[in-house]
Length: 550
Ligand code: AMP
Image (cartoon, rainbow, N blue to C red; front, side, top):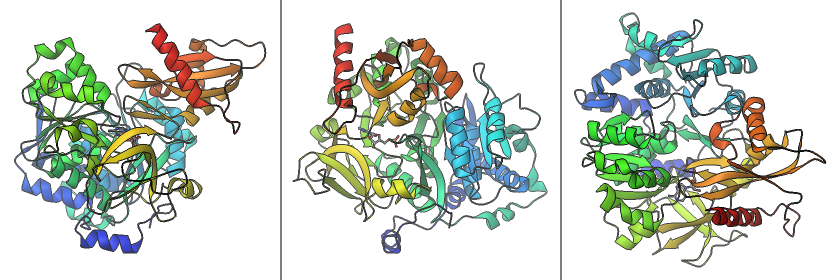
């Protein structure tokens, strides 16, 4: 077993297998099956270029053979920063087929994050895009390799690959299967009970947490999500959100779409026109999206310039969809919607298309499996009376039992009997539908992208002029929330917003989406009775200011 992985207890594993949620197949086994079944159908299209299931199968096998030939081994880790393009999907399946664990990073991550992932997981490979005028991911990989000597391979998509790095296109052109039989891959088949993918948590701590999803539980996740969202051979999923997000990958994501024989269309931009153009040209039928993007589409003037009639359904998740916005989907986009409360740690809730309207509009749906267990508790972990508000605890066949390599943190994040503490404040309606009412975790939900306040505070505190700081969510009409930094300075110091951003960018090298979008200088912080900075009060103060300014 992989060191640092918390397995499911045997009694639960046996039950989940007996009930058919877990099938003891690897994601690679399922890949081989659906490739054979849908061989002549189109699996992917990107910028007008179709790729059949047969071609997808051949490309994935070829890459997997190259990976093992180069020296990658089962349970090695590979940091994925590839953008929304077919190479991301080829590399993903090639890796999981031989048990190499993709770490689902984002192209937007920078040195602070990638260096941490590399060192924390002992990653041996890094997959990056070559392009980009503003930022060189190849330059980033070079720096990381100096800090993390175990990182021995950089795989690069696109043209202009540095000499000592490995071109993915180059590997795809080299027909290794003519020299080494594809049968050789069998030797590398991982155990379905072991981690297949490392998802990442926006988390509430100083560093992101690594979420190990096994073949069994991840497959249970995308198969059931695909079923509940009616994915089938005629489904065409457009993916404009980052392809490595759990939502885009497995809820039901590209994994669930391909499993169902549908077609995946990676969309390279989240710009409204680019998305509309892709829907029109590729006849996209389903789009996963956070409410922020969805609202932008619905409010766009471009709406009347494109034919979006192929769109059957949007999957809204990652942040709360207001019932007002939900009501506008059908009239403006002409399609249905599913609400989804999702978390990379596992449990998914979905509204069903035949749910009563009041449930569809006002809740984030019900769990996927009969053995998804949920509890809503007060601050002493006692169940609240039915229908009352409390903290959501979850356990089930798609929910992890612990973060990777984090024994101390796991004691806090999970109950002794294995429930994950979501830190979402919810109410259960009619005994099974969840309504998210808030959260107790110290995060900022920027249009569905989660930011740990503590992580950014630690970077701000490293500024020599800063005495103390608190990072809180401020309301934003488009994104829902953005980050606002309240900062007190050391005596006789001044700090401008631009100076702070420059410092975070050049000295701390964090991803742009985590950066504060406003700086509030204060002499003193409001404090709670127990002597902590009163963030609730800070959120109230900044929300008030935003209201006055708007
Ligand atoms: P992530 O793992 O990044 O997807 O973040 C999971 C968290 O996002 C959940 O625990 C919630 O706090 C939040 N979240 C996801 N979907 C929704 C939703 N539909 N409504 C409200 N919050 C959501």
